[in-house]
Length: 232
Image 1 (cartoon, helix red, strand yellow):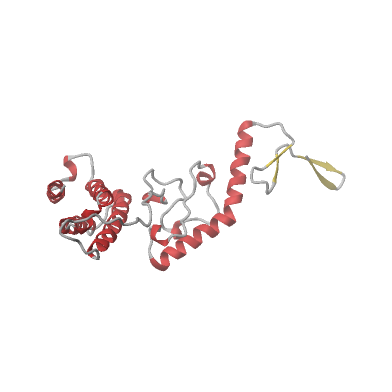
Image 2: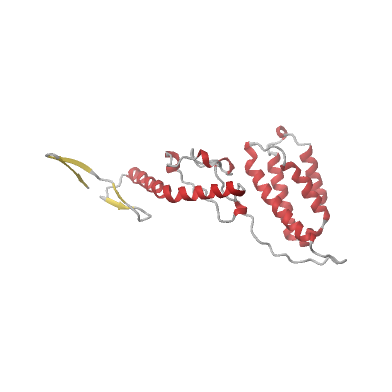
């Protein structure tokens, strides 16, 4: 495997974007994914100095200026690299005998892919109001947002899973959760009304799925003398 990764490093060094459909960011992400898996399958690899050299050599390709098309791959590669460094740091603290006895190390967390917002999502932006920058998100939902069938991005409580670090990551999380609580029920209710209108339902009224409001679909206005009545 050291020969394999040495070959990968040579390929990345002489990479030409126009020579192959796969981007260099995709290859870097795949290389780190395989490397992290090797450290999981064989714990003795954590004390192998060659893996430390390989990780350091490949990490150099993450320091270049990112492109907009490769942000998602670079973000995933950074997560793998962070996990690899944690595993190698554990290996440095283990005293190894001459027989290289394998040491069981419990893995603290799983690496799971999240459907991130905006251009960071592997499937692209959900709608015209889906952005990785919260300053570009409108408070009230747009028509595309209302009609979107994809679930909105909500950051988890684990700060290590945020795509923004520090105080900016905290502000991003609080804004998205607060907006979801305040605007989410309105967005979902309008989406349901649109579905009812498309179905041409004849029911006099229908209760919303979330049970927080009543939706009337057969309203009529009638004028009697000086007063106006609303009949359902």
